[in-house]
Image (cartoon, rainbow, N blue to C red; front, top):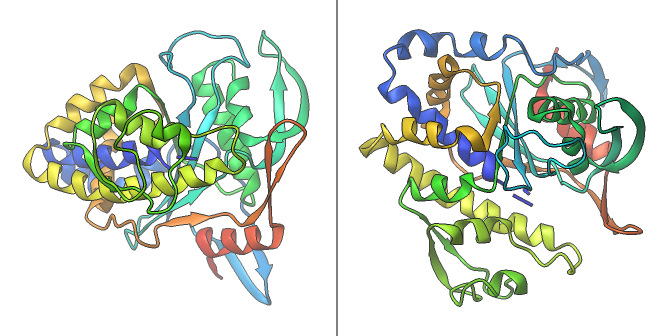
Length: 332
């Protein structure tokens, strides 16, 4: 899944370029950490802990932004009933270190099993069931509530770390994001291409070099054969390759045409839900020159099995705790 990828991460990188035309750049850049840490989506209660004989505390230098790719093509500001607003098909947690300017991206499998709160059509709590985390988004009373509920789940999964901001985009945003940087070139896998993807264009064949534009970018990032076991994992590999190509194209585009980012933000309005304020956008430039795909995306280890109806992913609890400590904590 968009490691799944994804679509949200791309949006975050685009916003980073806004600073280039911002008259408030110097002030906002100096205040980047402070601005983004105000009014957190989920405050979290990450407590000191002991791990393998060492004492650790949460790293307060981090800014964690939850990015969601929504499996729906309706405008995100459109009123729909709980349970009908789509699922978070891609779930990424971007962690920015305000001191070192490093960035890490945690890919959370959409099929990861955990307690999900269910609500009725009026938004009243009904019960809690162990389900795929992708389903939590569907049960918010509105898009903001859906984002916050998913953020709460992610925080609980990761020892209650804070989630400072969230951003969700739907399918309609992908072609605009892609074409804004002149398209993205990818190399198809040499041995296997998802048969469902291959149906969309003759260029999607093993070993082919493809320059993605328009709707082809959406197909490349989203389409998979839902009847093939673990097809979401193959899709994640495509998404990871796409992100790598997108980063390079993004950097070059910002150098020559930074004003395009303002237009993108306006275009994405109805296809995006976020609590990132305009005054916070220039903060992302603090990290853009260090954007590099290598070793940036972190995966959760675990076991994928076929459930009664759908695939289910169960994280390795020991490995997940180690990952959380290494990524979000520091020695006391």
